[in-house]
Every structure is written in C-alpha cells, then in structure tokens.
Image 1 (cartoon, rainbow, N blue to C red):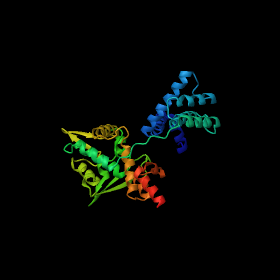
Image 2: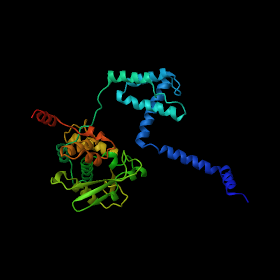
Image 3: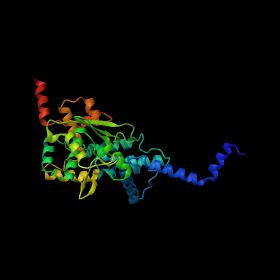
Image 4: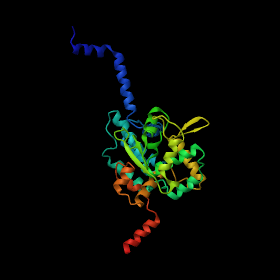
Amino acid sequence: MRSSFEFLISSVADGSPQLVLLKKEVNHYRRNALAISTQKTYKSQYDAYMRFCIKFDFMPVPISQKHLLMYTVFLSRSLKASSIAGYLNVVRLIHVSLGYENPLENNFELSYLKRGILREIGSPPKQAMPMTTDMLLKLRAVLDFSKQKDLTFWGICLTSFYGMLRKSSILPETLKPKDRNNALLDKDVKFCDDYVVLSFRHSKTNQFGRKIHKIPYCRNSNQVLCPFRAILSVKCISEKSQNDLFFSYCTERIIYNWTGPVFFKSFKSYCAKAGLPYADLTPHSMRRGGATLGHLKHLSPIAIQARGDWATDCYKKYIHLDDDVMLEAARLMVS
C-alpha cells in the first residue's frame, strides 16, 4: 500500500485538472487584488506607455535611462505635473512584475527632471467646490418630491453631506453582484427613536471589509435639511429585501437602482437647473462641504476624521475656510 505522501505526489502529478484549476484561482485572485477603478486607471496608463514605445520604436522593457527621461517630458506635454507620477508608476510596475529592477528608484536624473517640470508647469490641484446648506436649499427647490427619483436623490445628497461620505461608499459603480454588495443595502439601515444608524462595509480606506463604519444621523430642527427624515422617506417608499440596494425607486412598476455614474449625471443636471456653479461641483462636494460644516460647528478634529472615515489627517485639506472666516481670524490676531 502506498504511503499518504506517495499518494499526494501521484495525485499532483496525475491530476493535471487540479493544477489547471489552481492556476485559474491564482489568476482570479491576482485580478481582484486591485479595485475596478484602479484597474481602469492602470490600463489607461499602460496603454499610454505602450503607444509611446510604438510611436518612437523603443523597447518597453527594460527601458533605458534616456528613454525614461524622454517619456517623462513627453507626458509633460499633455498632463499636469501632478499626474506624471501615476503614469511613471506603471512603468515601475511593468518592470518589477517581469523581474527587472525598478527604473525609478534612486534615480537622481529623473527626480531633477521632475523638479524642473514642476517648477515650469506646476499648478495647485483643483478641488471640488464645497457644498453649503444654502446650495442644498437651492438644489432642493428644483426637486419634485412626488417623484420617487427626486426623493431618493435628495436622500443620497443629505446622507453624503452630513456623513461626509464618498459616493462610492453609498452607491455601487455598476450593478454587478460584487459592486452591489459593497454598497449601502437595506439591511445596513437601522432606525432608532430619534436617529438612524447607517453601516458601511466598504470604502476607499476599507477595501477588504475589515471593519464596519457606523454613522448615526440625528433629527435636524430644520426639517427641510433633516437627514433623518430624508433617509426615512427613502425607507418608506417601497418594500425591499435585506440585500436590496437601499437607494432605489420605482417608476411604472419598474425598479431603478442608483449607481455612482447615474447619480453623477443627475447631480450635474440638477445643479445646473438650480443655477449653481455645476462646473465646479461634483458629488465629492458633499464630502468636502460636510467636513467644512463640521469644522464650523466646532466638531473635534478626531470626530471629523472618524465620521468621514479618513485614514490620515488629510481631511484638513477638505475643510474650506471662506473669506469671512479668514477676516475674523485677522481681527482676532489684533484684538
């Protein structure tokens, strides 16, 4: 009788279908190492690098120092200085994944060249304009709350604003099962007497679901801008199962689920209709506006960081101090 070890060796050798299955699983998990949005970004940057190499008949791997510097300058012709690093990072990934040394590491000439580009064409990054409560009121004025679409749209706005949330934490990018399960589901919304708690299982800083980020929303004395009532209205418009997307609506017996891209288009459209500067506003304006409001309401920095689920203190960049605040600071300095 063969030993268990001998049986194991023969099983691996003879059972080629098992090896094929393992290879498929390896590829499956490798593909899922990056978020879909990151995969799309890397694909775009990879294609740009390959087009450059084909255009000038350069070998992509390994890239020479001269060609690396030329590619950096080539990128500066069409990109902002702050965007070049991302495109060069793909060059690093290609080389490292194929077993070559990282061409960007300890590269003095490249660092010096990037510094010159930054000095020549550098510009501050453009941030989305923060949403304010006055803007929200103007936005609300153009909505028709007899329509479930507008009712749920308003719920998304107030949930994002008062929760300082990213759009991707609430809405799926697509309606594929994996994306749906990472979004806010009906089972993630729990009502108490005078507040509601939303549980978020996935975010930019929690891509692997290692924690549940719970955010309470209380009643607002201003009923027009009350997130509790807005969320309750969404809950009451239709019966949902626990695993249905929370932000959905029904029109002529057809169920529509909000996704990130659909909300983005509607947000721009409603902002334009309300006479708001829609070119400078994005759904991210809700997150920045909520952080600013929290600061003006004297929330502690720790509370702002925790509520908005920031992994670092970069939340400070989201807080907008307008001219009145800066003028008051100047007066306090000389008082």
